[in-house]
Length: 263
Length: 255
Image (cartoon, rainbow over all chains, first blue to last red; front, side):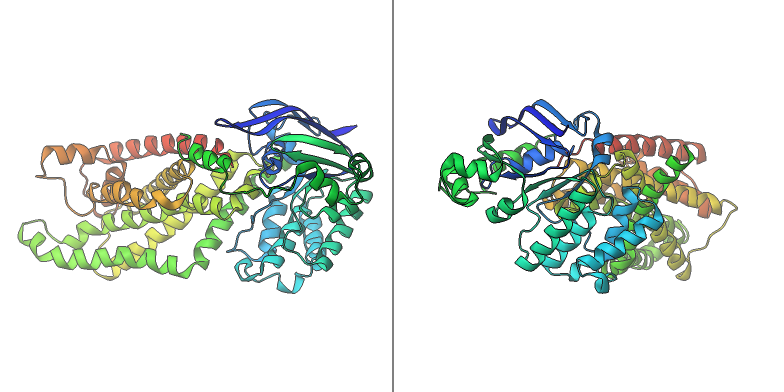
């Protein structure tokens, strides 16, 4: 059974197609890596899957519901760790967790237990009453990951979750996520720039470039297909060696202009 | 069904609580938003007091008090609404927007939080005004709080509306100069409408804050320009209108 089903998904910002006629599916309980260079359309796709952005065209089903029209149902089914920070700096670590737990309707006793368990797990329990603004980047990241897991979602979206984390923490967190994946059959959809991470963790991989999916399969298949020995080499062979720019690209400019004049 | 409404309540409650926590933790904001109205009250009140009395207007502090209370509420409420822009820039807005809570409930929690903070601010300024010689007279004291709540709700909703349209803080100075200050100056907060040029009175009577100031003055001092029913009616209708517009635009936000 496919828990995520995407057919001919397109998102256009002005003249530019950020996501161009993309189709793929993720089956229930799978760990799926969505890879691509900067600006390839990964985050835009995630935003459409998670109800934050309306697609220009195409069909999307997340846990059997359409994110564009059945937002509430879709939102009940997933948890997400965003690419960029999304904590409230003026609240403490515990309050950030509590806020999330309440919004996701986790019953009080379970909420308390899970917050304690997760904060201990990411080694922030002794800092739980500190304001988040006093945290380092890595601590914030750990807190965000812990927060995304409070409500034990059916699908977990992770947009470059391990960016800026040391190998120890990365390993620690993936062990936990893989555990949840096994125990609760939680589907994991993640993006990363660490190819060896994708190779180690993901059961299936899709590579997107310039808004189009250019390869799909398990890491072994992709290596065989490109005749390379690592996923990193396969990735480079498929997407080329040109360095992409993000944040100053035409898409972003247009996106910004569009936003400013949207209404 | 009961469990569901309880859960909706708790979502609104936690959003409300967050606004309060943020407010009381930001000491500079707390001090600033009390100090500014007080400065206006003292400087204008004692500065223009003698001339106002000479012109036959009576005690200026008595006149100015309600206006300054309205000002404190206006500023605090508007900024609470505009805080959405910060939340967007710091990323926290995404966290709320992907949660399984309707935008209407998010808006409700935030607006109630902002309005609570603004009312609190109004009460502090009321007490401060009383300390420097403002007298509350007449039996409509409780009505004053109704007007405070209405002004607070209205301008939190206006702030939300603005924040839903603007995407960054660049337009902020513009809003300050072309919206907030004129709203305040043309509300009858610092000078009476009697004897003003007709155009000015006309413009002022289109300003919703004028009805709020008038309502506060009626409640605390028993003096009114528009009358109780118009004050309540105009303010309630416009508040409802902006709550509607704010909710609609907020529900359309895409990240």
